[in-house]
Length: 102
Length: 419
Image (cartoon, rainbow over the protein chains, first blue to last red):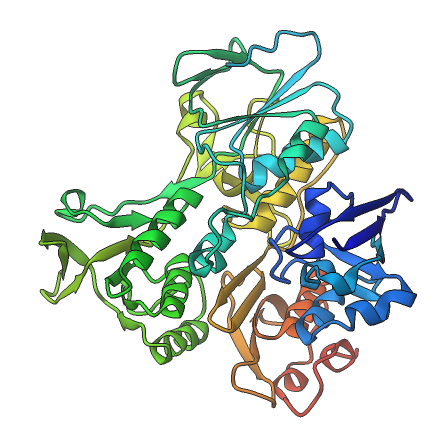
């Protein structure tokens, strides 16, 4: 089962396992602080912003066009930013480490 | 039935949808150590509503996976849910709510997040036909999905060309259902968007095989052998096995009104989402509130408003000085089209259409009151939505000729008028 690690703004490190759905849904299900997912995962609210660990960016790849534009809503966007509602959980993501944006 | 009679303060919430649930969690986050009790007459674990008319209708998943929070989260944050329980009265003198079975629950702070319910238009014979549905709850969506899927040849007729009706039409077309949509006004989305955007969605739905008829005021419905005949004022008639009402909502203000809480077009609240009773707050679709940016009172039906008012009310109850001051935003997904709207285009006097060169299905409409940008509607164009959001928030002056020029890249540098 793919394991994903979230580092919150309070520097909590939480590792959880998921089988399906998005990384945002996994975060909400596990009460990860800072990931809201207000729009339910349709890339409309930008409340699930995470920074992918630079070494792991190949696992997720770059954001799509709409996602990339939506990320611009947050002034803290970096080259490793993703909206995690757009990350489908699969075996490729096993071991992924993300930092929750504030 | 709960009867929390401890010394710790009790915050009671009526309504467990986006507003009520986000409020409960925000209240914990703000440091509330008392009880939090949430009531809703809907028996299902609180869920996201927007997918119901969109992905949920076409999905094959047996259960609704779009929960607002996991069940464990409620336990972890010590938020008590009482689902399937209707509140029939608020007794402000005793600071108590009374449920339908007569049980009482005291509160120190009460939050009304009762939302709205579908409006059933006064159409002759409507109460006598079977297979008439509205869509507000997960149960509604499950029923529609089941009825449509059990016989895909059933014809569906949607009354009302608003966002929900159009989203349902798009979802059902994806399933291959025959869909007719009747709109009372001369165009769909008549009161909620510009003529240009209305025309765009009309064209998209026609292209996808929805039969849209405007200026159709439905006057009666009759049913013979499971076939409904829907007749309009102008004596035209249409046949369908399934009727879906997309005719708008009634705001659930009755509980508040009966308790002497001030209501207008919704429950009247101040900038902290507080009603005229200092211990009673109201949030979400049911509120009539002031928007400072546009300096007008509005009632909004949106996830954004529900979530943001929830945070404001939670902060206020925990003693913070807060002002609800946001730029409203909305979205709708139909077919492969993503509509994102930001701002309120009330009383605009100019609409500029910005086309992008790549494709006809990517454009934006910018609504102005003279030089002030009021709102932006973006079709498959998150960039326009994001730039619109920033420009509206900061009252940036837009270079209108650059905006119209699709050979210029859409970015802040091109968009902002240099002084």
